[in-house]
Picture 1 (cartoon, rainbow over the protein chains, first blue to last red):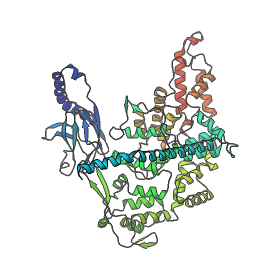
Picture 2: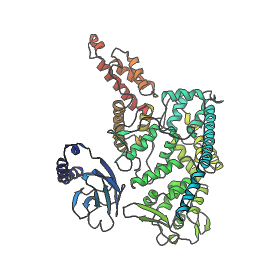
Picture 3: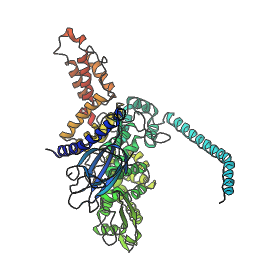
Picture 4: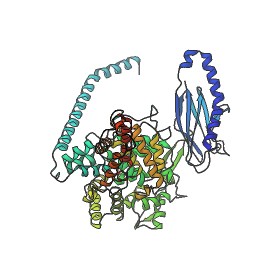
Length: 133
Length: 493
């Protein structure tokens, strides 16, 4: 299985749970709301030793597509967590010079983006993303 | 301030406003009139027949437009052949009056507009689109030259885009100013470890490339590199909480001791190093020869180098006069019927789209450029790309064939139903295809092979069926157009 497939499968698994919750919320809100299309926003993310830079600091609620590029020399990953520490989605390990996409729906709030390989987070590979209404 | 005071101040502003506004309007009108006059003069100059127009043909225009940009459309070739060499060079080198603009349809990928900062590959498409739609192609061509010359790679997208804008702004100005901006550019500073180079731990990376690749080539010693590295200390990277970085110069981290550099002695700082390297006798010939090889396949004679060096120095190291001198050199127009410079992938892709009037409607070009071996913003090393025949690998050629498919399927040369009846003669079918792909230069051998293909394309059909086989005529057109876009002649300019 290729790295991209692993990432895709994990994305689907992580996103699936959230997607189901979102879908349930939409159904509960009624058919008019369900028809309203939430936007997909791309966020470029650069990873290197030991920084994680998100090229947007805030995005509108809806689907967020993280485009992770590993500009460093070591492997890195991207984990999306709530401020309370609940993990929402993660990529697999991305080798130096490679790129992957991680896509998931995000409700308004603040989220923590980190690389959780070894001690990379403690060394500085962490940032936040605000999702607005 | 009391409430009364505030009210009085507000009234004073209101009373002054019409007077100030009228003055502003007059100033704006005067500026607009001056701009209109300048544009009229430039248009008049461009329309005047050139004294040196004798012997200036469409083939000359095509050669110039390919070398200085991304090819000429048939209309451009005819128009500028009539106006003569001087007027054409004025237009190509100076750009249109009023500066560069993007003309035509804005690029869309799968129905959405580009997001060069955040979407994969959109940065590449964004620059490619500029090459395809700009009214000042030399500016983009020189931006490409500097991107290779000051090669920077693997840096965060926002920084690379900022560097790209800086290279475009400085593309045809003073080399010294460009070098100053490159030295302070965050992407370059991080790529070559100039950021973080302090008096206690000077890093020689940037100083070495400054002399070896950016300005001199030869004529310096290891000691010069070490001393320049000391003089360039003091830039500190400041990483912010959101992961972005800014770079500052901190005098405390700069080595302000005396250095001996390129035969001079003093407490040199950053700008002193840059002044010394561009004043070095090796600099002008080094840059002249590199720039020449970007535009002309055959090496320059010693006399040519001497003359170009004199032009460069006489113009205070400004790039535009030097580029103009190269673009008007007779050597550039040698063998107009047998081009000898290999199109690099970026020029090949941008040229195929631009000359055929096609636009970016898919993300394919970005993937194709990667597999062709020239992925903008990711040169393989600080030495840039290997140019020339190195572009003609078997895999790269395969991808150039794929680009032909893209243009024939999604570009303006796509074959419309009913536009190419199977009853056309072989010659007519060839000419229809040739016109559809912007009348490219084709050798007699290639033309003969394509006409031969057209003549035998329907051999398997019963002659009585031919007038009902328009779909085969359209397939022939697609084939001919594709082959014209990818044939050996199209790989050179």
